[in-house]
Structure formats: structure tokens, C-alpha cells
Image (tube, rainbow, N blue to C red; front, side, top):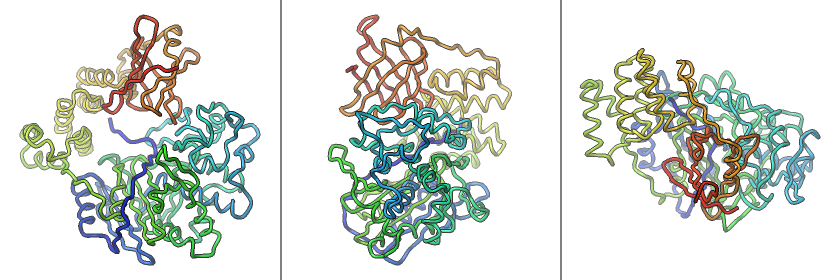
Length: 569
């Protein structure tokens, strides 16, 4: 089964050096090239800003198959960097007096929408712009019909329904809890206040004044011709059409355009225009927590008191931006891969930041072995190399999985079968290799073996709906486990997994739900009376008792981690 990431991500980093450079160093260019050569990324474009000058560097292609070299005019999805566009639009409204940061969001939403409150306090525009609203990262009624384009069918009706029925679990304005939902809602509020679409607001107030002609939510004909196709690993993915929550991550742009945006932010204190004044407002420290080690402007993350940054990711793209107004330096890095490129940007802003060496892709080396010596000898080579040189190459589970699908695309089923089989042998406790091997076996007409592998994948990851769907189509009965309401009620409570991280378990209409600190609520599905799994991520939960009735703790299994949590409420 092909995999993609399905959420935006924002990480903050510690910028600790004031050292600067005026050009992109040769060593960093070699690092970027090594990422491409070793199949970590498909294409990367860097824009480095020093005062009024901009230097570009690019490596890789718009696609692995029939692609052209990427450059500063190639079009990428910028993901969550869209959020600083959203708060810039808000700042424009604040500065012209048409909106106030202190305004409750209920002022702008339809009267039919019931906005949640907590302890008599209302969510304001300020709370949305600083991720302090108490709203979760994503709404729990986000159930995409097409996982490859997961936001396309999320409607304003869905958004209103979630807001109206959500109960806040944290006090408003206290903690910084990153929320795509909140920033997407802010973008929609700007639409309602102005009577224009979010995209038109971006075009009218940011893109046109800065001559950013390739910055849009909907691709123009010209942009389509220069689109760098997104990739999950080395497999092409669909673009994400994010409209309802467009303010959270729906913008597409180029490095050429984004350098104009970064330059405008760098120079905002010295240029007298409404746009530049709005940018200046977004840079001011609006939230700071020593406990969380977090400082924010409006959407911008502030590091070391002077660096502003924001990154982003969608299903097939990653992006990173950073700037230092005092030094008049800035950087934008875009890639058409879901492999993070934050380190490249940080290295340009902080020259003594250590870059991890890129390990050569074992898939690329194995591919050459297959072509030169045949699949049988290549399999032996893989096993010998992994046993003797494990640290010398990238042996991640998706390496072989990606290679297998490359051979499927080439209609070399014989080789794909051997590669998928090798991956199952190499990672016997991972669900996805069995799913992919099952797919190839089914194509080969080996239905019985395909069923065995799909079943094994389902045992390892009960949330693998793809395996369930295939097995149902093959008329294989999937046993549905039910747990009595009496047993479910025993699990209700609050479990502490870390000093500030809790999981709250609730029930409703015979179903069990999990909500982690700062996240949306998701349903848990049973595999037996004590073991449950999530469908939104590959994760499992097991409840432990000291006898048949008293539940003392739970254990969360996710990403190879085993996280126990004691029941505290």
C-alpha cells in the first residue's frame, strides 16, 4: 500500500548563532545534491536573501519520470506557510480598523453556528492567530473520501457542524496548541468579513502588490505547466485542494515569489505601506511561554528573540521559511517531496548548525544490482549488505516498498514480487510490507497468498482499511468485534502519559473515543475486550486492570514507541 502523510506539520527549532554568510556555501549545495542523488528528495529549490540580493540554487526534477529540472519558477505547495499569509491579511484588517484582535469569532460567524466557550471566556481572533484558542489540531468530522486529496470534500457545512458541537477541553488563551482547524477558520472568517474568497484576498492584498504572479490556491494554466509533482517517498501523489481550510495550508507558490514575500517581511519596518505595516504587526511577540519554550507573533514562530520562521508540509511537499530582520537575511526552501527540508534553511541562517550526512538509499543501489546482476543476486546483496553495513545505507521500511512500486509501474511484476517479499522478510512486524506484497500477489493471480498477506497486515494494523476493503471484495469474512457498553464504561477517564500529556477516554452511543492533549477526538475500534486501534493513524491502545473490573492504566503503541499512562481521573 502506498503511503502519504496526511497532516500539516510545524516544528520549532533553536536558532542559537548570530553568525551569517553572504552566499549559499558549496558544502550546503553538495548536501542538497546528495539528497537528490540518494533519493531523499525528488527536487529542491533554495532561495537565499541577503539584503536586496537573492541567490537561488536548485537540484533535482519536477518528477522522477518525464520530469524537467526544478528552478525558482517551479510551482510547489507551501503547506502551513500559508498561515502567515492568513495573519498578514488579518493584520491589514486590524490596522485599517475594520477588525480587532479582541473581537470574538462569534461576531463574524453565522448566527446558526454555536461557538464553544469555556469558563465564561470566548475565542477571539487573537486566539486563532496565536494557536491559543483551545481548538484541536484537526476537526474530528474530517473523514476524507479520497485520502490522496483529503481536504477536497471538507465543506463549510462540515466546519460549522464541528464548531457548533465541539466542547473545549482546555482553557482559552492559556496554552499554545497548534491548530490547523483554528487557522483555517480564521481564513474563512476573513472571507465572511470581506465578502471575498480567501484566494482573492491573498491575490488582492499580498500577491498583486508584491508582483507574486504565481501565488494562488487554484493553479493557473501557467502554473500547471511549471508544477513540480508531489511525491511521497519516490511515488507521485495527488495535489491537495484545500479550500474550506485554505488559510491553514492551501497556497501554491514558487521560490521566486516567496523570496519577494520574505524580502517584504524583512524590510517591513522601513517601507511605509499598509502591507508592510501589517507584516510588522504579525512579527510582534503576542504569546510567550517559558514552560512550553514557545514564543509567537501572529502565526510566525519566534526563535531566540529575533528569528521568524514557519514551515509546512502537505502530502507530497515540504517547505521551510525563516528570516532575520536585523541582519536582513532570509531563506525559503521548497521541495516536491514529503521529506523535511528544515535543516537546509536553518543551516543558511545559522552556519554552525550541524547537518546530518545523507545515507545512500539502499533502494537505489539495489535497483542497480537488479539491472546489472538480476533479482536473485540482488536479494543476496541486500541481505549481506544489511548484515555487514547497516549504518552505511538507508534501510528504512519504505525504501523497498517504494522500489517495488517502481517496478510495478514498469510492469515488471516478477521483480516487484521479489522486492515486496524481501521487504516482508526484512520487516516482519510492519504492516505495510504485507499489504504491498498482497497487492502484487493479487495482480499475479495468486489470490490465496494475497489473502494471507492482507490478513497479516490487518493483524499488525487493524486500522488498515485498504486491507479490509480488498478482503471484502474477495469475499473474505472480516470478523467485526463488539464490546459491551458495560466494559467500555470501565475505560472512561483521564490517563497521564507525560507531565503535560494526557489521553481522555469517553463513550457515546456504544462507541469508545480517545482525545490526546491538544488534538481532536477520534474513535477507538476494538480487536478484543481490552485492545483497540485508531484508523486515523497507525496506533493501538491497550487497557490494563488489576482485576476484572478496576482499570488502572492504558498503554499507547505508536511509531515503535510504547507509552504507558496511569489513570488519574
